[in-house]
Image (cartoon, rainbow, N blue to C red; front, side, top):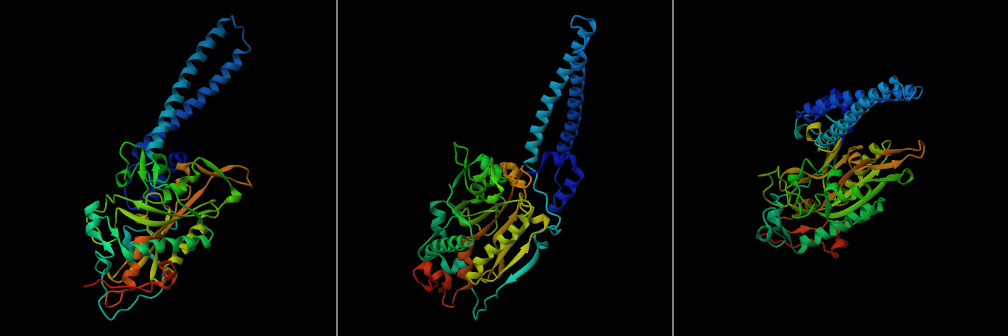
Length: 425
C-alpha cells in the first residue's frame, strides 16, 4: 500500500499520478480524514506542550495553595482533551489504513501515458514468426479430446477447466522442469510452497481486499487457493527484517494457480488461454530500492530466456499507466506469437512493485551502511505460464498433418520424444 503520511501530505501529487492509470479514483474521504488527522495532531501536540508547561509550573508551587489547585484543574482538562484527540487520531489512522488498501500503486514517472492496452509500447521483438504453406490451426483443434479434453474438464468441474492428457500432460510436466532447471542455473532458489494461503498473505501482495471476488475462498476457513505463487513466496518474509547482505533474494516456484476471472466474462471462451486453474512457474525477487530497477530488467531477461530456448517468437511491451495491475508501479509483458490465433498473447507479466507490497507485508531489510531498517522492494514475473507455453508450442510447431514437433531443448524432458502424433481427423 501507499505510505499514509505521504498520501496525506502530497494529496495533489497522488491524485495527479493516479490519473495516469486512466481512472478517476475518488480520494474525497481520504482528503477529509487527512485534514482531520492534521488537526488532531496539532491539538494533541499543543496539549502535550501545555501539559509539560503546567507540570513544570506546578513543581514550583505550594501543593496547598489556591494557584496549585487551579493549575491541577487546568491540567486535568488539558489531559482529557489530549486523550480524546489521541483516541480519535488512532481511529482516523485506522480508517485511513483501510481506505489506503483500496488505492493502487503510483505509476513510475517513466511509465508510458495511455488510455488502454492499445497504448502499450513495444520495446523489443525476438525471433521470427514461423511461416506455413497451409492455414495453421488453433491449439484446441490440434489437441482436442485426445490431448486437451475440454468437454470432460467441464463435466467433472465446470467451464474453463481442462483435462490435459497423454503428450500434452507430459509436456506440461516437462516445461515445469525445464523452467525450474533454467531458473535454478540463473541463481534462483527453488521453492515449493503451499497452494493455500491466509487472508493476511493475500492482503500483503495486494489481492485483498479489493479483488476478493476473483479469489477462490475455502468455505468455513480464512484460506484462499493461490492465484499465483507470488503470494506465498513474497510472504515468506512478511514481518521479517532481512540482512542487506542477503539481498537480492531470488526464488522460483511452481504452483497450480486458481482464479475466478470474475471480470473476463465472454473472453477466451475456447481453449487454454483463460482457465480457472492453470500451472505457472513464478519468479520473485526481494531487493533494495537502489537495485530494484536493475533487478526488474534482469528478471525480464530470465523470463525471456525460456522462450528463447524454445525458439518461440515473442515481443516485449511496456504497459501504459491505464493497463498497469493494481500493485505494480512498472510492468513489462512478454507476448508470444500464436499463429493459430494470428495474434500475440501475454505469457508473462514482469512487475516492479517498489515498496508497495513490502509496506503491506512489513518486509524490511537492515541497511549495513545506515544501520537502520528500511522497506524492501519486491519484483516478480511469470517464468512462464505453463499452459500458454503448451499452446505456443502446439501452434508454432504444428505440421500440416496436425502433428507437433517437440522443441529440441524439451526432448530430454519427454523421454527423447521428437514429434507428437496427429489426432486431427
